[in-house]
Amino acid sequence: MERDHQVLIEREEKALEELHKAKHEYETALTNSLRDGKDETDKLDHLDEKINEAKAKYERRQRERMVHSSIYKPGISADDVVAAFNTEFYPKFNEKVAQPALDKLLAMKEAYFVAVSEYEATVRQFNAEKNYAISELAPKHQYQLKAIELPNINEVEKYYIQKSEVR
Image: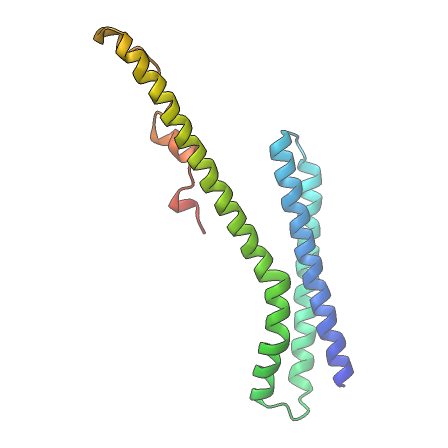
């Protein structure tokens, strides 16, 4: 019975890995299609179906393990479950699933701040040139010079991450 339980755990872990792999494949294809400007609708639809199948499989594996766990209890105490969860499941899950996701978030956050900083430096550089040009013009011509700053809230919301877009 113990061996059966371990097999069920391994099957569940494998199904979870397959689900994460399918999601990663979809995200990569989506990003590439947007970056390259290609219509990959059929491929994305296929990958979405693959995610749904992997999710259903993972949920079945979870139910199998949970049912088996509810039937098979060879003197396992709550402390045993807590210890096993904290020393076996948590470290593996954290290393293989949670931490890579957090690392991606951090990398994207850093890339975003670098891009914002570069844009702001570009605006400062442009405005320095514009101010020089203004100093050479009569006041009535100064307002004819174009600006590089984003002209309205729609443009700002297009390029900057908004609080409402997070989570």
